Length: 198
Image (tube, rainbow, N blue to C red; front, side):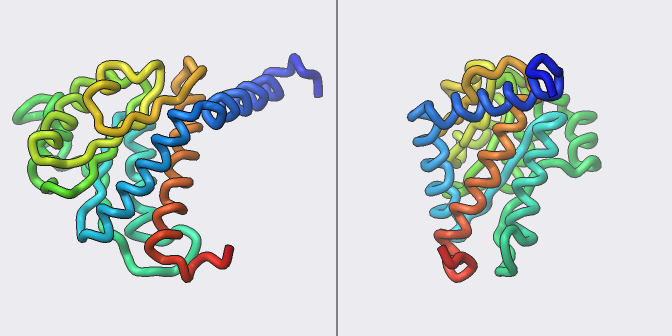
């Protein structure tokens, strides 16, 4: 297959994005902070909450279901929720506007000591900004899984993980799901070490 083939080029670009992420000390440190904070939240009986728009909502859902279901092996369910229920979202959007769809759910479910994960390839979604503000008012640690420099959310979240180099949403989202899986594994290794032999 030629190096100019678009499929080969896409894989090469994806690998370059991953390399850039792994070579960025701030990115790696932020992932470690995310994992440690999530584990601490669960150990203290807190809730992991997640939200995003479009493909980022899919990632938010994926993050939550790995905790309530299973990841590498059987274990107790861990409390995590994605703000993705259509009836909740459409009710809130209809009554309060789309900018409030996540903030209202933070208000309903969040409490001090919980963790909110916001996922946004741009960091500029108004409903993400409102969710961050609602979380900060309640003493909730906010992790931002971001791209394109982090956008407005960069300075609003407590822990920012910004995919470097990538300029398109697909490459950014590919790194986002890698981060989520790695964090889930790290949390399991901390809370359920018996599921891991090495």
